Length: 259
Picture 1 (tube, one colour):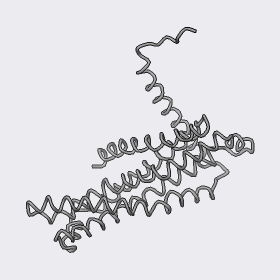
Picture 2: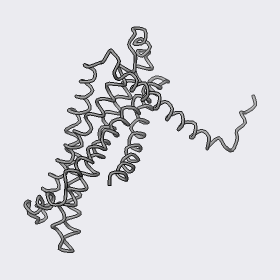
Picture 3: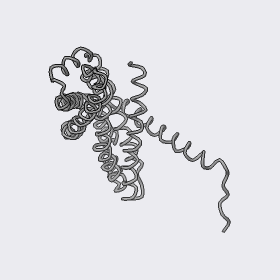
Picture 4: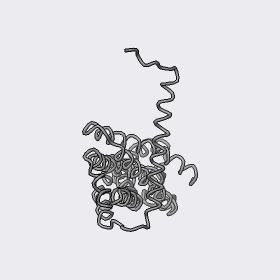
């Protein structure tokens, strides 16, 4: 049997086609979700369950990672700025960095790793076991039951998690700064002097975009899952990787616009 002929453009066209397919599928899922968001039935119970899963259950890991991110940042800054007798700016630098960048991004990444992978695995398992087809036979639209609750939960819970991460990051920076001979009063005075409420608001405004990205990517990867358990594993891995990359890209674009 003759081998299939290949062209020099194959290594280029294949990723391009995959990218365009991904964008098209995500766009169709998002458009269908917007079109059906006000149509009955509204899965209130499933939405609350997803909000608890994404929001409440993610608080411990967000607090932990935010705390140590602020702590290590404060450690480096205390030693570096101490060489120039500028330790009065440690609190301001930690506060601005945590509120503008670390808080929103850490919250998005933790939710992508913890919840995005779980959502993709759940929907992917339903897809390969034909449970989604069963929903359609029962006149339950997959968008209303699977997509909308996760999109709403991601958009509403990420700002709360970002605020929690900001608080834990500044707390970690404060505790480490006190071990580097910087008084807590001076640290908090620097934070209050340079960190404005708009910095926290802008940081929180980034996160609904992150939540939307995580939910759409997880649903898209889950709904297109094939090949049984192997396909579920691939969907889970792809969800985490794609979500994290898109979160960093969106963070840069939003920061460019906001600041």
